[in-house]
Image (cartoon, rainbow, N blue to C red; front, side):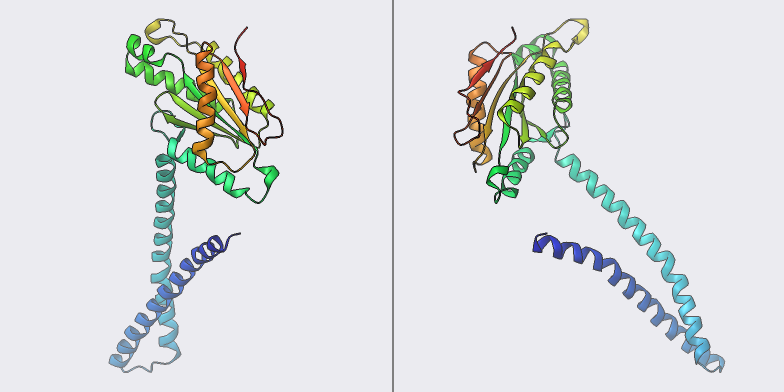
Length: 266
């Protein structure tokens, strides 16, 4: 565990303990002072009776306050967690926000920096074909619904450890950690095929949805922007070849190198 993370975890555990100690000490001190003044005014000896009763009073006061404070802290932690989830997600599709997606891809690469053979992965860029025509024919609300439908297909087509993000407009990204070329091709074809077969009927009218997928398989230390540019080149190839196609290539240095294979429905 990194030193910063370890210190953060230790501090997180100490804060409640310190707060508990300070709260009880404060209550005991206040109760002792109160009892001392009360016993002296009544002419009673302030020995064990005053100390014990002060401790009882302190516990009676501190316990409910601490329970309430801990409950409020838990509620605030839950709200903070939900806020972080909302801020990292695209509001329309619930996929990862584009900037968060890029940061997580780079974080994966940094995490396995010391393991050269663990850096292999694949980045797919999925673009909706003729999306402007969908908006023009059926309106923006149906265009938004089309993006949500496609986003659902993307999330259902990947493993639990894979990432799906909306890069902007009608373009999505899929990151497949440790994927080999065959894995990337399989996911790309699955996405393309399922979307092409998805029934989408805005206003009761049949609308064919298709996507083009460009992908790059890598095994070196390239930053996200470089990976994205390489995947975009494959996407452009798929678009040029007629759309509703996939084109996956492997960068030099990957275990398997593809020449930029283009696939399309038979």
